[in-house]
Amino acid sequence: MKRIITGLFFVAVAVAFFSCKENSLEKQRQNELKKLDEFIRAHYSKTPELEEKPSGLYFLPEEEGIGDSIKMGDRVQVFHTTYTLDSGYVASTGAYEPLDLIVLPPTQLSTSPSSVSELKALHEALTYMKKGSKALLIFDSNLGFGQYGTYGAGGFTSLMMEVEVYKVYPTQSPEQEKEEETTE
Image 1 (spheres, rainbow, N blue to C red):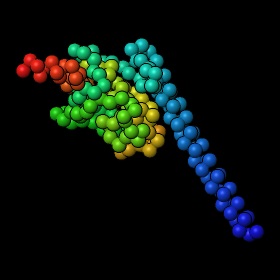
Image 2 (image 1 turned 180 degrees about the vertical axis):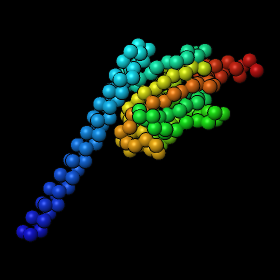
Image 3 (image 1 turned 90 degrees about the horizontal axis):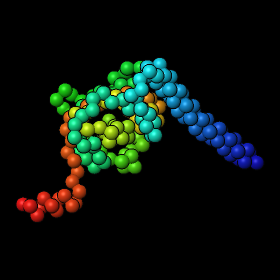
Image 4 (image 1 turned 45 degrees about the horizontal axis):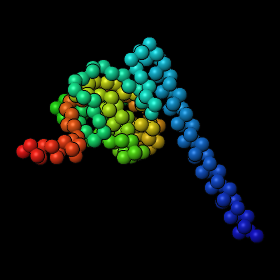
């Protein structure tokens, strides 16, 4: 009988512990979204160019750029500076060292990225940009470093990112590759 009571006690404690933890994560998420909404209203309510995308990404184009829009699968080189909403530094590229990445769909990106090159917000934003484009991105942790965070940005931290597309290397379709082979 003593074992049953002790076992039930530990089960009750475990249930209480895990249900509070989930509730705590949900509260952190709601708190983050509230702060992001307040930030947007305080700083960008009179900026009609700021566009909220269906994913929750806020995209503010600063320079148009030239050429075709970037597509999934294209290799790009970008310069970026990433901050928290309270202007805390997170990461940036060097003045002469662009970040080199292949633009991927969200399904191929981690829900817990460990570097800027893996951020869903960056990959999505690049599809709205061209070579030479500059933009400001504002996004929540769902498109950023997630609930666990990374160096410089804790879990459930919304971020701002200034992005400049330096170079674009378009992906060639199989038809284009065959066409090039026959002309050689």
